[in-house]
Length: 219
Image (cartoon, rainbow, N blue to C red; front, top):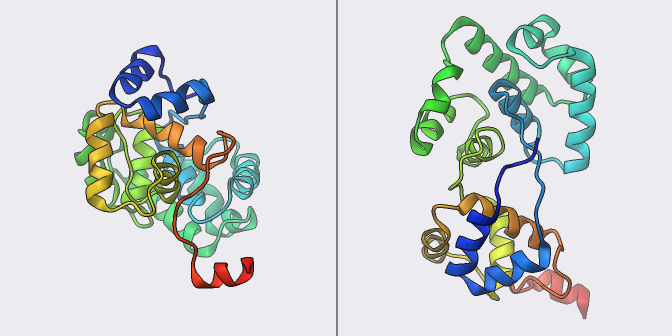
């Protein structure tokens, strides 16, 4: 299943920002897979921290083959050692098993997360070991499909903003200006900024100043 959006969101963003509107027209519809099972989504996001998309796909495939279904029960049945055999680091395996134990015991109530506001849900999710604000925001977007998620801590979002608007750097103040402009459809804006950061629009470049080391290599 892909993140659900359509002309209502894109036409609003185009009306608010002609520059982003040109990007939306150039890129077309962006398809990004979501996982609507909250337990599975949390585990998926923990595994995906600081690894490439290709590596995540490989590890996730191995884990699904090992567990059959990614639930608290199956995670605790196989244990941390089996998770590591799928290519998951020791620390991430500990985070995942700890999460599974808390869900199974009722210490962490997954059912209440979808009923919370974005801020409340993030506050609750970051109580889990291995979950920071960025990971919680990705869970809101790619599981709960919240429409107004815009993550300052996402480096690709910052890169996309630099590329689209020719900024050398993205300060918190500048970031908040764009958040206000895109709201209440920041999630869709994020999809397009990720696409730009990934090279979806030919000719767009990152305007961040090159480091001294990079300049030396170029010269």
